[in-house]
Image (cartoon, rainbow, N blue to C red; front, side, top):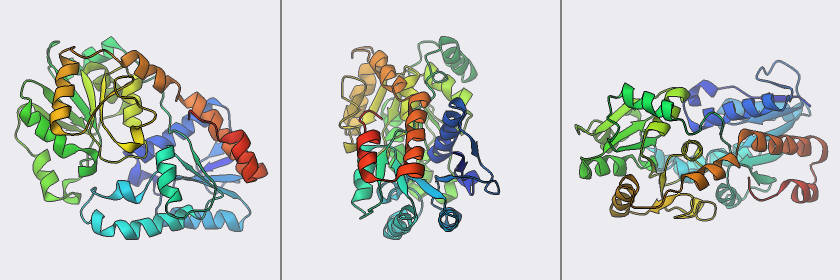
Length: 348
């Protein structure tokens, strides 16, 4: 079995969760010594698609004509397209039709969570859909005091400075407006947001938020994974105030790095992230502020050991083995009853 990880238009999303998911897939296949290529000119048995650009749909149709199997990773939904870029809310219904068209080309759809699977089923898709976490490299994202010290030295932060971290694009859906408002309310904490989006792509209120002149609010931009690992290890908590996700790779990274996590209380996290068990949850600015102060002031129990254990269970080794099982099913069986019996297992 040889897998084509289709790389068309990948540069467009390279600095996003989708780009990170593809890197995870490559790493997982390499760890398991599975033959793969990113060159569509080579021979292959299965094409694995991750993007929803027109070239990906053309690739899926070409593969079908050649008798190849198509596995499509459904990272995108209409729900997480909303409240992102200029005009995204108006375009959301058209976006839904387009991604549905893309996803229907697959012999098998993979999506990161059961929540995302439920959304896709609601679109009327009839091809097999399996949920499989994007996974996390828990050996790289791991508690590391020296990494934390590097972060604090780089940004000239004292050991007792309270640092709140978040990661993502500059889009409303990611909770950036709440992040900025919390910085305004909490001048005794330093707020760092890593990630970048060209400001011409986002609405005016997002530009204004990013350009806020608050002495405790920092937007260093996009950084490599080493610097991001250092930031996780050197911060006091990871705030994920997102309004909608299909999973959230940065959330898994934070858990793996052993940093306290405060997330918005969303349906996607209702079952697999328990409030007060692996993470803390908030619903409003007031509950986020209470949660931040409770965590940084050490008034709330430390959940990081259980949080890291959860992330380790979603390591690339585990996810990679499941991914290979899915490839084998798509290539050799394709029978729904086999998928249900051998592949659909809880936990990943």
